[in-house]
Length: 355
Image (cartoon, rainbow, N blue to C red; front, top):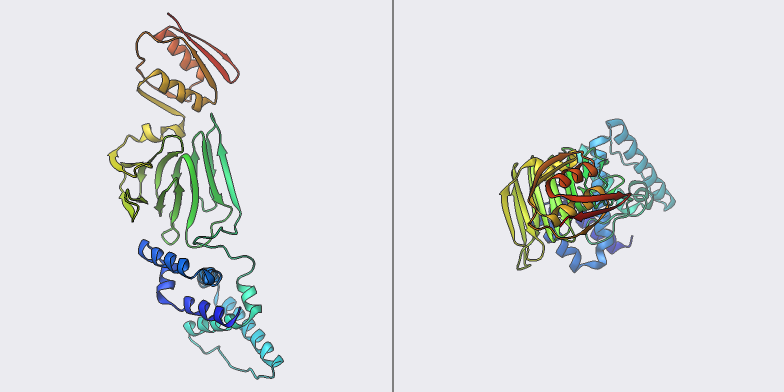
């Protein structure tokens, strides 16, 4: 690092607001530091290194034993003295009588001026939390039509994925939060960790939780995001209609929020858990479903293409509960109620409506 870069890095890690934001991020602090990095793009590298340094320092404070801490500092001082001796300087300062905060300060100061120590503490590329692609390995799980799955995330969180759903998540969670990206529908059972928020990014809507179970449906084609909270507490934020600030809302169990992603208008309402999240148990609930609605659901649920010949004499109003039913069993029921004929050829289904 050059001298100016060193100064920026040091100013950041010694800035109480920056450290507080890193340890306990909130909306106001995030907006401030987003603006700061936007106005100082030349210092992005130092900004990201300061973030990563604080993360690693916090990790070391949390996981290192006293002996390991002593060894780390001893190695740092030894290397620093070696570099001083090469320059004809004398070492010999003793840090062992210092209080814990002084040892941390020593590590911070020495690491600023020792390339060897910096490489040891912060190896490899530094992932950016703001405005820069993360240098971490992402895993993507994709369900097509007719496929559902359950995934255990790196922190132990369980994610149930519905059909036509894509979930991207890191191979290992790093930084100040556990972030995943979703398109489609999923039910999350989040592993509680008050110091490590779990965040779902989905089509312009952000969900932040600590330990919660909830369902989120956010498909590209219907332009609505529905979030239903089963247990715990959930923070939901998304753009305002005017675009000058964010809507921030907290859900309580038994309530859901429906967000229109065209207008960013929203509404709250209670919900039935089985109707919203029963899909993960193989449950289909139908309430006055019309023919088009039913055909569309069956295609996506079973991963088939259905062709319908003919028009019903009167509108269909189908009510029923099906759990882990075969497609043919549902079609047999329709055959008795609406007098249809059907034929299943692999993934192709033909339905003929009798005159």
